[in-house]
Length: 456
Image (spheres, rainbow, N blue to C red):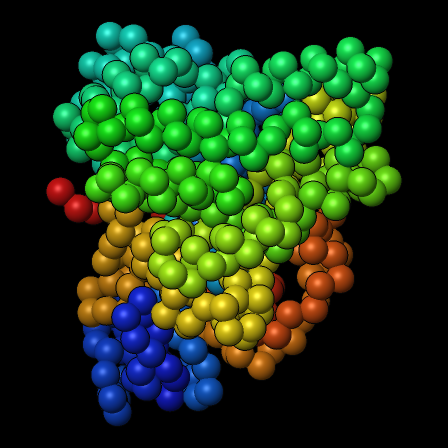
């Protein structure tokens, strides 16, 4: 069946232009002025922006962590993404220590296949490194997974400097890229012990940001980038939160190093004052790295405006208020993470584009096109061009709505931006030509397909 989207403004990272879009069987046939097709369903999108379906390349669905499992699996999590205009996610398939990569991927396919309502691909998070894993990587990359995740923190996931060097060297050889969670584990562990020694307990969430300071992020960013420079390979710094961390990126780039940077809406819009709220509320905002100061937000917004940050993702890692209560006697036992899948496009439009901090083209780049290119899904995803999937977010710049746990698709029972009123939203979301969501309501579920890298 053909569809003709008529009267809208097509947005890409390069331009905004009045154009029609003709699709057939889930694929875009043509983009141009005054298109016509006698046998097409005409969809009037006058006054609307047409974005390529947004991509969220940093999610944690159905993740076993901190002795619990995230509230959102691929069922509710992808519905939350879809409701906000996101038609594709890249989730972290996680290798537990002792597992083969094949085992890790099998586990994640069991979690996702048949349960996703938007399309999905995988990064592979590596926790174990040895000769067998190194050999196995070649087959994994040939099968279409080109992006990987490394951690400098967490007992269950941390890899050593030597391992980072060896992994990056192997990925360079095979054509892969790594995203790295950068925080200095030694500083964090020492400060956690110090809080316990000085205060006799760790109940006050107000002490949480002290244990994960911006300099701990900056040190790890600096160290990781120097290791990557030794290998001479690009890396992605994920969920960058601080001015200090950003300065390390700039130093590396000044020396000619290629560094990609991701940040998240929470680091642009929320600050560490949330940690001095009543304990139960404060724990809801415990994420890693922590929320920073307002001055850090200003630096990150400026970096986005200047094109120094490449992607804005969610780090969607949802828990219920009850799950967060695991840290009521010791904040260090709180599962870190927040929901954010549904809100991301609306927040970036309202606080970015409408406020004049970002252009429509930049919103398209950071939420869709750059992500597709970085993770080798472009132009199947991230573009409204002939041959691309007909993933279309029909954006009404005048639609007003309010963020609330009562209406969100996420299984988390709280919304970090509760009561926030936004102007601008994806009023219709098409996944491969199917109307999958409308005004936040899911119209088509479980149609998500697994994707692999398309560029050779």
